[in-house]
Length: 340
Image (tube, rainbow, N blue to C red):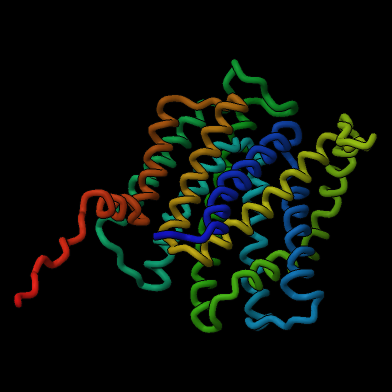
């Protein structure tokens, strides 16, 4: 199927924007692992300001979906975002964070069966088994790196404390996984009742939670002060910006590009194509993170990662669709000829 040029551009921007976002994220957390709150706040603020100008037209355009429903969705979205980013404070590496969040299909299927009473084909259950096994394998292999004497330890923690922090981080990621799945089910029922309005939902899901960051104000201010004290980098015209603020700005802008590009794909392409693009993007980001930042990644990590992404492709039916596209040929045109 042929798409317009701006759709292909959006596909490219998913790889560039989302991949660069992970790059800036790892630059930040490698120096300040406790930056989850300030990162989340900065991302929410940028998207909320953009939506206020272009979506709500400076507050003059009323939302189609009632506010009370947005407040429920915002509670889900805000909690999920904060917990996911804050988990990085608990010895969770960015590659493990990426792999673990790829298990969203598991949570979606489980809650779909429990809440919506859905039933799935055997291939779906096989895919979920592959994803679950892959995540468990990567998690166990990552556990071996906790407290390893050959690796530098975080100041103030011994190996037992590091391991307990890592367990807490895993629990946070698991909680966020199921919370995100529950939000997806809520959105599904909401859109059925009021229609799809993704740009409106994107704006309100980022704007309404902003007051909630007051609860984290002290931590955000603390990291802002530390960022301001980092080495300045000249960006041109004699202007110098502290290094960590440059990393944060890069993370904010690439997050915006990532979300906007995914929005274009969900609006213009079948969900199958969008899922394939996003899944391949995650895999490329994971490989880049491992190579550039020299994160420990063994052969078993690669086996687990292959199972996670292979299971994701099997779940979405991409492999079956590709097989049909390659091996199944359309029936030949009728060769009947008219007789005089």
